[in-house]
Length: 223
Image (cartoon, rainbow, N blue to C red; front, side):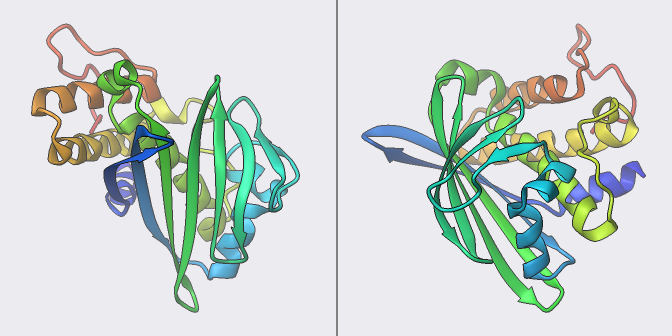
C-alpha cells in the first residue's frame, strides 16, 4: 500500500508563486490533481456540507455566494465567488490572519475531472522559514487524498484519523509530498539546505514524529 500512496503523492502537480495583495507581498501554493470521476460528482462532493464532512472535516454555515462557512477546529470565512461546477473562491480566516483559497474544476471528459486549488497568504517570514510551502501544501494534499477516496472508492474517512498519518501509508504519502515541496521551494529560489530543513519540519509536524540528532529519519519507510 505504501507504494500506492507514493504514486498518489506523485500524481499531484505543485507550484509556488509570489504576488501582492493590498500592497503586501503574498505567496500562493497551488496543488492540482486529476480525479476519475465526472465533474458534477466532484463539484457535489466539495460543495455539500454532508459530503465535505465525509472526506475533510465537519463544516457549518451557509454554503452559497456571500455566505459564511466554518470548518470544525479550523478556518472559517466568506464565499466570495461561486460558479456552478466551475469554481469557487473563499476567504480563509484563522487565528487572526486572512488568506484566500480558489478552487477550479476542469472537465477532461465524461469521467475525468481536474481540480486545481490555490491558497494565497501574506508572508510570515518566521513561519515560512520553519516550514516553507509544504505546511500549506501538505495540508491540502491530505484533503485531496480524502476527496480521492470519497469520490473514487466510496471511503468516507479523512486521512488524518486514527493515527493513519504516522503509519506506513501516512509516512509514505506525507514523505513523498514534503520531498516534492522541497524541490518546488528550491526551484523557486530557496537555498537547498533551507528547503530540505523546512520539508523535514513539515514532515515531522504532519506525522507526529521527531528527527534523530543526525538529521536522518528515525523510522524506516518515510519518504
